[in-house]
Length: 193
Image (cartoon, rainbow, N blue to C red):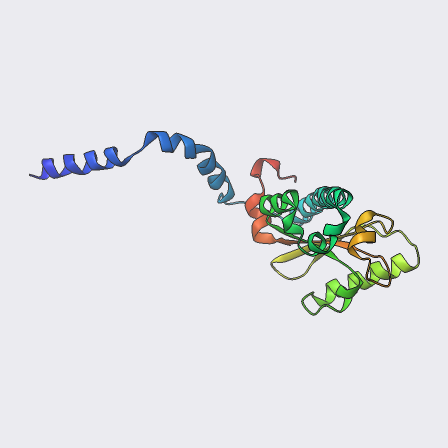
């Protein structure tokens, strides 16, 4: 009787296996296994990758928004505040686990931003007013979040269309990264010492 039950058990298991579905899911399963692999990531490595990703993401996001605004400037109000409506930016957010926003003068007093972020935004505004060149900035907000900022050229269509109601045409990209998502997305083979 035991042998029959064991045989039925194994037959049920083997019959329930769908080899066609398994082959199709191999790529997805492999990706998930890499993401959940235990990784040792130093703070220096974390900063390096966020900085590299931030540069790349900001350039792509800026080009995408610029292209959309050039096609139809009337969509500025919708696109500038809802960047996720642009497919390329939505894909970047999903791929890197990052939140992409465009900040302006009004955001200097935004209570949703960390005090450190408001200070940095104020410094970017001061640089813009004095016509000084400001570069990108990477800050650790707390134990779990990093923010990458880079200003947008004041003469770009983005500043002209997205910040047209502000006293000063001024815009900064805000890329908010979660450490957990960064580590999850890192490939162990790519980690630089």
